[in-house]
Length: 394
Image (cartoon, rainbow, N blue to C red):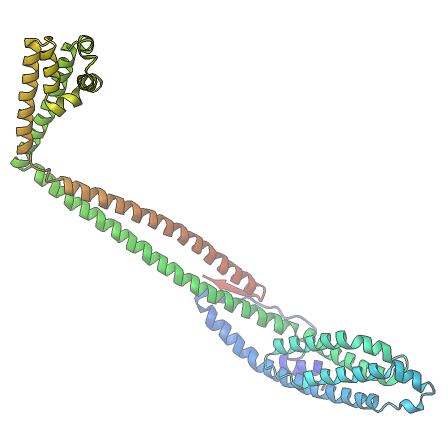
């Protein structure tokens, strides 16, 4: 049975007219099971074809071995130019026989049970043989022509047998390759869907955390409002306002006191006294700080000693110190703001919300990228199956 006859037996007789093929429609979610069924249908055809090819290999190898036997038994004695043959040809003759035997061994050990792999390994065996044996063949064939040519021609015919196998079976191999590629893409698509699911879950969790934080801040703010409605809080707040007002007043009065002091005259009087010059410089450069540090006593002592003190100045210093005592008393009665810790907590939670929102935004961007990749996978799968006249529906 010829190879063409065998293919007709497996795939049916050739018809003179091409039948009109209608598109097969498949739902995308049924694609994996459909491909599995298609592969199952191919499996029997592929196995029958493999058996036929392996039998063909045995027959071809047997013929090559017969031609090789004649080459191995070549009678060098009948050649008149014996010495020249032994010097030039015999080593290449031995090498060529060795390469042919390795070639035969390669096919004898070929145990692949997948058509595509078997054809690939067979092709590699032919390529390796041609690469390694070409030079030895060329160096020996001009004196051992017939026997060498018979072996080589038989191997070429064997190569033609495999070309016919590939050409006649190309549609089956292409279809098998398409299904293999689609299966890989479906596997990648499953992983992509799993990642999309995880990201959606993460986005949902982040959204719940944001809502939780907002609810927490709402309750804390309600507590703040409740505390601020309390009479003691209101009274404490009024004390704070009064304290702030008194501080502003004392600052204004200290400023007025500074305007009453003649620093130039004091400088002329105490210019030779280093310690007193230092006191004077401190008041001149930062009057308020110096005054609050010693309650104006340093300045007052300089004014008294220099006889530049006036009743207005003395009265103003006393007035400022009395007001400072009043401020200190008010300050002692003010309690810590009971809402400050709550407001700080609100700020902390607001920062947490911003972090969650940023993380959610990043996850949403990643989700969009994954969805785009998913659509690319689906589009690619649909295109490949369209080439097989299969329409995939969403």
